[in-house]
Length: 349
Image (cartoon, rainbow, N blue to C red; front, side, top):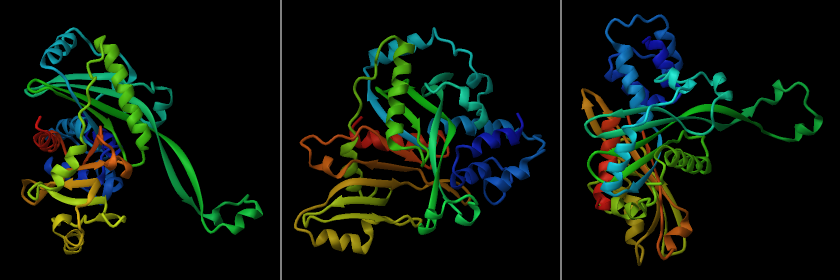
């Protein structure tokens, strides 16, 4: 498989901060950003199997990269039933399937299904993975140059800035992970930064509907409440670095703090610590982002990140609920499995 074609699919979905590490691990020369890197790869002769290694990285990113994640508690009996059903299933033909593992070009997506379409079933030593493709829309907001708008009515002159909104198609690759051991099934939805949170949650429902049709029964009835993770992770000083937090205080104020410089932890920041100590009672967290540092050899390290966020008012509910979190910056299975493992550890699952 040509390296340039695989890299083009990677560039459509993998943030450069992550992609440059994937390319480095696969010993592929990089340029400054995706544009320069893709130029370098044009006509690249794949004599060392780089295309296959990048193809594996692409499929791993379908499973693990930039995801909204919801966990479902499922009995071992039902997981066994699901495995039995999958043993009888074949992936149907579709344009998505024909191109897999590559993505369709953006101009090809307009006529492709908006509902999730099964494109791959794979098994490894840990479990079974289902990949669903779908055509979705992201909204891009761009500032326009007034001087370049030639047919502008005079009334636009009073505006200092003018913005335009574009709707762009992207191919979502959503994953369902069914473990061989354990009783938690993952639904992982593609969640690029400019894909609205409402649309992300709606996509979970679409994947669940597709699973119900595939299995003939709704096995995903019991989503795991992730709300306890906010305090459990924040209060564990040895659990990664807190790089963002938002909370209410006993003095009726609201704070939103970020500390995204490498290797720093908001828990240990002097201003944050002093503020907490000055309060008569603790803080009511409603958002955290925790980042882990994982050494990959040499100078390369990955920085997978988990973000958990509920509305402020939810923290005061009798039984606060949070059904999904964002997992970002994962290079592949190992990063995602690590984050997932820390989540299950703190939840006692």
